[in-house]
Length: 423
Image 1 (cartoon, rainbow, N blue to C red):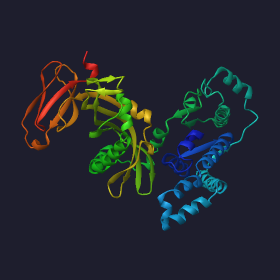
Image 2: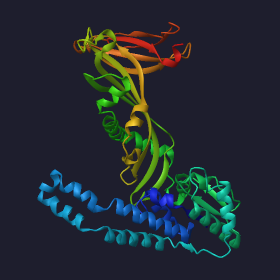
Image 3: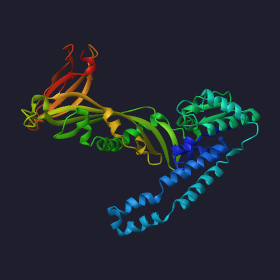
Image 4: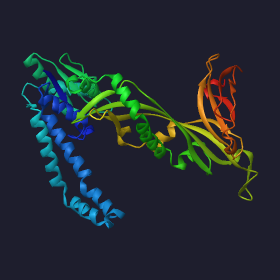
């Protein structure tokens, strides 16, 4: 049986008991596939974090917001909101701790009490020398340092080894012949008995059948991230904009799907979506005018110019596979988190400026020139009244002037080089 240590950072990241990975670890321990070791100082740290999380995010805090919202006006919801407000933090802590105790009990964990053999002087020496788990950024990792010594002592006594599962990089760097760090999702994926041994080819086939619905969910998330015009004002350093729109969203998926957990009737897989959102931002062109400081106003400004941007992000996506129904659904996008304002700003890349008329509609995509290797931005223009007027046209590389390919889906094409190919 494999000995496993689950660090406090994993419990916190997994919501203590509700996360798919940690629930699968408890299942594996109950099935006697793994043997979970828990130093008493780690258990104390887990419970302290649990108390802090519950006190910070208790039900009453969110119920107060619900009470001030329109939801409180609905009779069928009001009773639920009031019931939520009635659950105080102390009661909530007790209930969550009961669930934690239940999971630890069914996993049959082995608790490791602090023994007199632990050399505290040696730990203090590591602290002074900033040896893992101590570092310049994390100088006060005494609970982790003590837990690691307890685990080593247990392994020496039992002539065995132990896997370290942690979100803390300092534990990853800890050097020991008895302790081996592994990535949480990689280790969980190695428990093949729970995976039902479904091949990647099978998953890809089911994914293709569910792809339209899955990508619609991703696209909805993308629209939410780029829906604030202030992002474009700050990126382009302009005073205001006329309009903004997402013209096209391209999604490329990583392979393979990595299995991370299970529930009855379904399995959970993690992959990554590489997203490129083509965005048009219409705004006054202040470069064409000048500012009169006496009149305190701008003159000779073109009323509208269109900047073409791309939002490029790579996000984790958890997909739930219902193996009875042979279909997939998105369980979470970007771990159920939005991009921060700074992350959204950093994801934006300027790819050109349109100087064509306001009545034109266009989309943007890319080609790589097979002759000179340049990355080329292709603008496809379609006039509203001429969408059906199409003929085969050559796409010319603006660098070597050779034909990249031919297309016939638009009325007119133009090309530009990416910034790094313009030199």
